[in-house]
Length: 199
Image: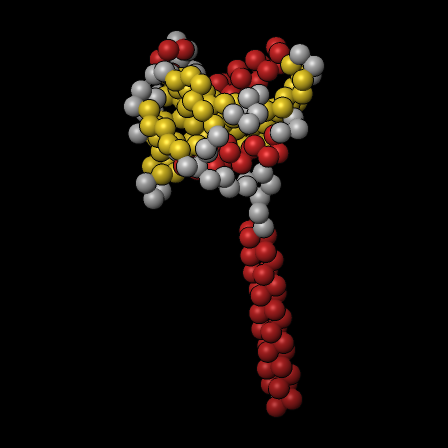
C-alpha cells in the first residue's frame, strides 16, 4: 500500500514538473515572438506637426517633407530628398457619396478598382483590419489597410493605403513611392499614423 502511495506521489510530482517546464517554454516562445521588430515598422522622428481643423485631425510628420497641398478636404506632403515619394491624407464624408451602403469595405474596394484601372496587373498585399485607439484607449476607430504594387509610365510604384472611419467620415492615409525607395519610406507612414489624433 505504501509503495502504491509513493508511486502516485512520484507520478504527481513528475507531471507537475513537466507542466511547469512546458509553461515556461511556452512563455519564453511567446515573449520572443512579440518582442521581434515587425517588418516595415521602423520608427521615424516626427519633428513637424500639422493641425487641420478642416480635416479634424492633428498629425506629426518628419523634417524634410513639405506640405505641397492643403485644403479642408485633403493635404499632400512631398519628400524633398525624393519628390516622387508622397504622403497624402484625404477626408471623405459618407453623405457626399450618396450611397446608403457605403462603408469601409466598399471604400477600400473602390480604391483597389482604381489601381486596376491604372495597371490591370496591379498586385495587392498585406490587407489587414485594425483599430486606431487614442486618448488612452477611450476612443476606438475601425481601420483597414493594404499595400499595392503597380506600373505607371514604366515606373514600378509601391503604395500603402489605410482607411480609418470616425462616425460618418473616412480618413484615407496613403504613401506612394518608387519601388526601390519604399522599404526606407514605409516607416514614415506608420510613424505618422501612430501620431494621428482625430478630433
